Length: 142
Image (cartoon, rainbow, N blue to C red; front, side, top):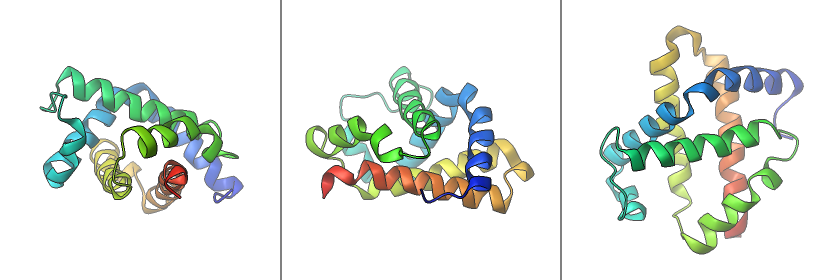
């Protein structure tokens, strides 16, 4: 495990506050990614990716639910996200760098909603967690 005991507790505590806003935060992060990195839209040609669309809300919630699953399995994130990893690598063939782009957008969303409560320490441990999730999602690319 990449996270220490204190970091794991911080991630779990933070994620409990994120979970009720899964659809909103996920949708906002995806929308930001599509705006800042238009090349990422290519994987969503059949989606309405307009801000607040039902497609964007649905996929945003799906992304956040997967991360919630990972937050509940910090001791084995790779196994928790195995199904998503396989799908993204073998069926959807998503460019792996997109995971990193989405992480950056998630930090912006968290900072926007939590303000000063999203401290540099919290940012760092959440980043460690999200990077571990991205690494797990890339496991089927190897």
